[in-house]
Length: 119
Image 1 (cartoon, rainbow, N blue to C red):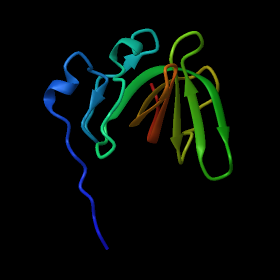
Image 2 (image 1 turned 45 degrees about the vertical axis):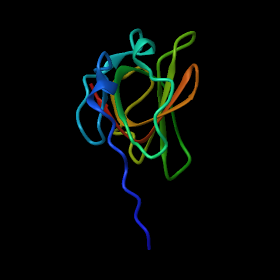
Image 3 (image 1 turned 180 degrees about the vertical axis):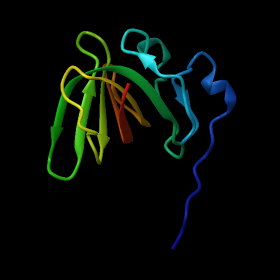
Image 4 (image 1 turned 30 degrees about the vertical axis):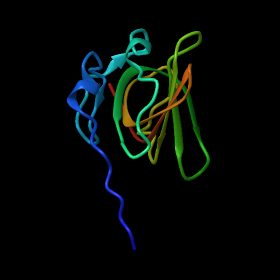
């Protein structure tokens, strides 16, 4: 069995990106209005970066095993959190999402794994 270590990003990566942090470290949640300016174009494949964001729930769905919690509306960046518990959240609730950052495209971010907590 081989184990591959993740590469930690240099502190310079996090300058002007307070919503981002090393894995499992707290970042200061961004808002839907200011997250776009902080988004990196990419993160090295062997690195994990966490992102924190606060906003109102715009989507909440389950497939029976996982929950999908979405925040932020068009025309801005949309953020989807993949989590094991919705913590009784419902559409319109204020929430903080924290999780592993993965940019899907210019307007979509996936946080997986992710925690969704009432604000």
